[in-house]
View 1 (tube, chains in turn yellow, brown, purple):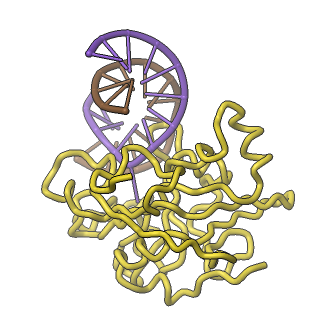
View 2 (cartoon, rainbow, N blue to C red):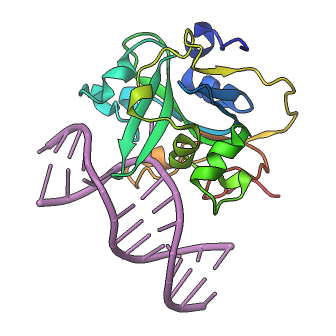
Length: 206
DNA sequence: TTGCCGATTACCT
DNA sequence: GGTAATCGGCAAC
């Protein structure tokens, strides 16, 4: 098994973590031995009490958001729109409820499994959105609040061959119209990658 | 290519 | 009871 990124990686400034996670590899090894993985091509930073788009806005603590106050390097998976899951990683120190949402992957391992579940999709479309990547990697409630620094089943690691591609940024997706948080450039992506989610990054010219 | 809409449920007020 | 860090289908342009 390749080495998970260390706790220190996630204990830094959330914006830096979000940008630095782009290009790295998310791995999920299932109980039956199947290995599902993909290159992270898009992320978003969520900045805690002062971020109107964060679940932890205003320092809110609920059964759902409790994980956000925990240790950096744990997973935060929540159920949304009655049908989908979203996968996040907790950042910063204990008590500071910030996280990075993983928004899109380029599928790398386990393509047969992913195609079998979504036969009508092209390979690059199997995980090009936060809900879709959870379907592709089979991430759900059971994977919430896992320590992805210590786990050998769910972790993020360095790619064998890093891509030398520019990282673009833009406003976050799906967070409504309140405040000027709509415009904060907290979304990061591998410039021009086919597996980026919709909508397109506005400031990136292909 | 863009935009609207319905699906479906946990969570919060 | 309203709404959400979404997706896929379909209509219109």
